[in-house]
Image (cartoon, rainbow over all chains, first blue to last red; front, top):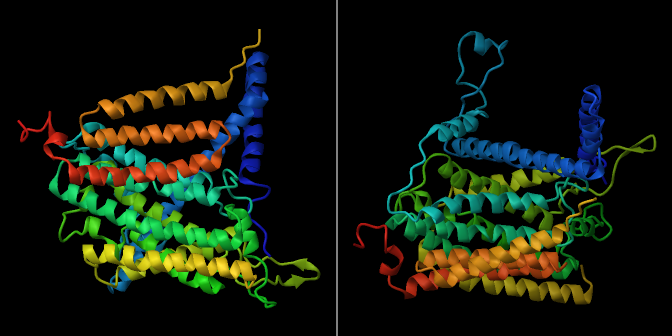
Length: 402
Length: 95
């Protein structure tokens, strides 16, 4: 219905950029009368290498610098508003604004507060406990960060905004997210501290019991749509719903409504947000499995939870909420030309941030459940319901009802 | 002379060397958690070899199922073994 902002594609754009940059480099070497070096720079292999390098850089900056900071900012502002206070307000003011002239720098939107916190964490000392298992203690943050960034290798932001088009994209995202629990248990165990050990074991027990319903719900969607490719999945959800102008998102199918709820609960638990935050219950275990970390390692372990939240909300949106489709099929036309209401990237980001804000809203308004209750919800409620979802999806697929 | 490198062969050699080394470390490591870490690396490199064999589905299932099951193994390992085994060496309490 609406076009993508990025045409032709991320890699295509980066290719033209690379060709321009390498052309400049070649001109420089030609001016230095070194034509051999110059022509090496524009040979196909070098161009392809730099193209993918630049595309990778763009994706990492987009995901980690822009979306992670925005996610943190939305979270902090929203929970402050829920608690009836302003929240973070430190900001870099416009030099020509009235507030800046009066010397007020603490009345802004506070977007740069997270940057300031990151700089503070970078300056802090990286302490390693004397009794820790050094190798695993240092490997755990790297494993968590790299497995989370791996998601964005295949994550589609629109028809054209992706790094790699993989036909098994959903499976790849699930596989990348499933490495997280292992690094958490490593982090909890290697610090050799009572609190981190309990936190790590709780995290492992909880994530094991919530990964199963999550994957079962994905199986139900795969049964219904018949594909593991996120692009095809979104294309299937674009058709009209029973002749109306509404799109037939998977969440409108009766078995998938249940699946949507289960998947949502499972990702809240996977992210260790508050109703299920027993691994880092601050009142019981100082800071859970992150207790012994300091400096930027703590920043990685703590801050990347929000990038995982972004990735998991994105998966939820692609699976159930129609990906980058708008909520209306029809495109308004002016003099025969279609007017795009919003580009596809904007729809996807709006949906992801709405889902993330609902997660924040839930997690700052209800209390924590007990450890045994968490496992009971996971094993004896969610898994049978997820199996029921698969059964329902199979019946609906066989009868061709949806 | 044009020097061509078979990058798939290079990758295969790197993966297989890492895999064999990690497999040996898995069975010789005395600390349980380290053994689990080496086992995890072994399984991930096996999935890399699957990708070289053009079996992407098997590779992803390898990570999802096998590497994802290492925490289960670790959990049972920790529950069913003595803690003394894990702390030997550097810790002052164990001496």
